[in-house]
Length: 495
Image (tube, rainbow, N blue to C red; front, side):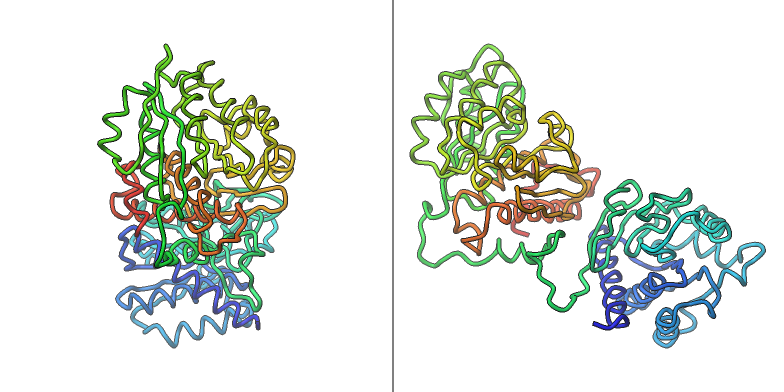
């Protein structure tokens, strides 16, 4: 692939990604302000603005270059010339920093105040601090004039980030669109990167299964493949969910509704007896097994484990931990389930099951990464003794598959790690992890719930993470990030 072809693909991909993200947030692009550098990131940003104009021809665009035209890289100059040809003169303006040595032009300030999309293409990965003073001053002036309602989109990585760290004037983006390859500073300085949306530029021989960044479309196709014409509910597995308590019954309901919606053929639930009737009315597709409660309002260990052993021969995956609490009785039950689930049955552990004592119980089971999945967030992972820079070593030591939830969710086993950027801040709510746990159980309960029946557990789990994130985007578009009801998330799985 030639440099020019790669740049065109990168710029086009960034423009289309901006259009998608703005569309999801019902933002109509009417003015776009581009601050471009002399290098290829500047050319990418100009091509992105041109691509946006192709879809929203009523929009206007202003491009402000950090250098004069003689210093632009040849391909960046070529992309600017193409921009001049494609965008009518009345729809565009171009300024060059050396021509604005004194007061910043009034027209540029006014445009910045009214623009609703700001595209940052000043510096790329080759940037090294310090930030040039003349560019820093102009960038500050433009950003201070910027409307609070506008969104800032960085090409490849926010200007001012590099392997050496973040410069004093590093840009804080709302969205970062890494092109082709994910640059390390985007993850190392997440507070500057905003929401990360990788853009594929289709390198020759590009193989999604061999790259660290998961390709959303690839995995969604694996989920939504048609079911066989001749099938039975047992073909799609039987999930057993153990969870809930008097104080946290909702977590269990989110597990159940999620597993049902994500395609499990049968779902059985061991639950506190006082919620059984009400929950059965809300989710009649599941089989609710009432169980005696202990004095803390959780499942009585002896009674619940007796029910667990009774149904275990008929199930094909177990999910445990959501809403169970941290009482001694609840933790004894979790440990007995962790140790007592046969190795051949997938076991998903979440929430209150994520404690060091559970890891010790898994050793009794002889845990296997192909059959054991845990879903901690950063705090729970630290409580388990895990370190963010040693996830594969952690998986190897404990014999499991890890879903480390966060802005970038990491799915790892002892051999491989994948990064998923499908999520959205709408998931920063209690209950979103309970929904994901139900989805993961549904993906593991039967090979037929995934188009590639021989796919490793890691890929099935990653598919659930991506599906979960994309459903959250649909929820966000329908209800707004602030007002979204996380219990409605399973309703968007189909979309």
